[in-house]
Image (cartoon, rainbow, N blue to C red; front, side, top):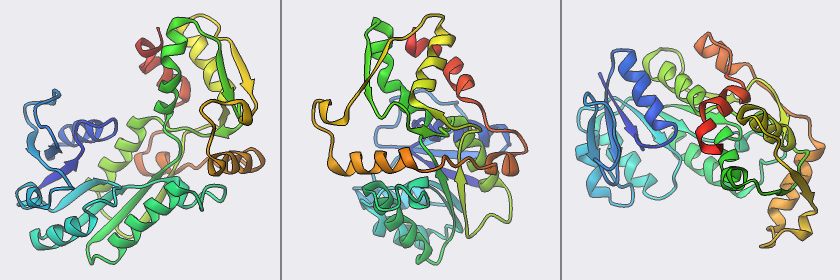
Length: 270
């Protein structure tokens, strides 16, 4: 069996490829620009652009299972080509925004819900992975941390149980190589909910120096924050932080901590 990993150079997709190879499963990876990044020689890389339907048949030829990023563009064409190719199971990287009460009406939730609905109606078996905020979101502060700037951040006390990208990939590999996951939607979180301030303090502990932080009022942020974003963040401030045990239930191993993520990415902040 060969699994097609769409976006094989991505932060999650690359780890899915590694996990499949470790499990003895052959992987075919896709990219708009194959060869632009390094992957193991055992990976067959092909060009696929979901905006160009003519690239789909060759990528899907002989494929039974697909790891797919949520993307509305080219979705109908993907479903049609997957059915024609005899694909049996699609594992979709969706988003917890679809099920999180405070974000259920956000633009992200709406986009992911459209993709989920299309796959539910496709006639192909599906599994939805719904991770919460990626720990890698903290990389947006890396330039300021490296240069020693004072970080000026709104909504400093919003809590999220952010997730290590490797944990998402580990779940994806188990779902792609195991049985009984069809028709399931898995809400994936890290093992602990932390505030934005606690995330940054953890990064400071890992790099061995304090990071100065100032909380900004939302109206003082430039460029101005969208009202929809302010509304969602305000709701998250008042909402209980949800932590699930799904990663451990599926993989048999506890989810990685944020500190583990920060240690894995220490070079980005040093």
